[in-house]
Length: 116
Image (cartoon, rainbow, N blue to C red):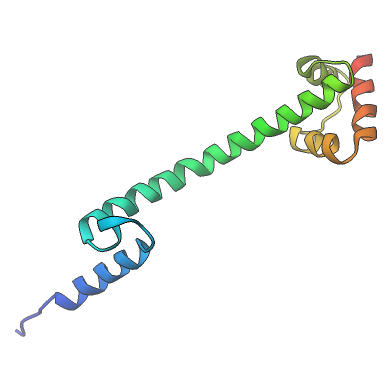
């Protein structure tokens, strides 16, 4: 049976790893072990932050809706409760968009929420 030398596969794997670690500082873009650790951490952070981005966007929408609701003389919690009582099903993303782009429409929604 012929002898199999595995240098080519290892070089290819290391090269792919170092290309993925491009742009990092110090030994993290030159040496295999630090590059691998940096890459694993980066992938873990990316996975975590995809969920955090969703949370942060919802938080931003809530802040915007709260600010616009207070300009219309109603608190955020009363505003959302009024919408639920009136069976107005507009999500926070759309409400925030209304608050930023179309203040008159948001005011109409706020008046409906106040009446409830």
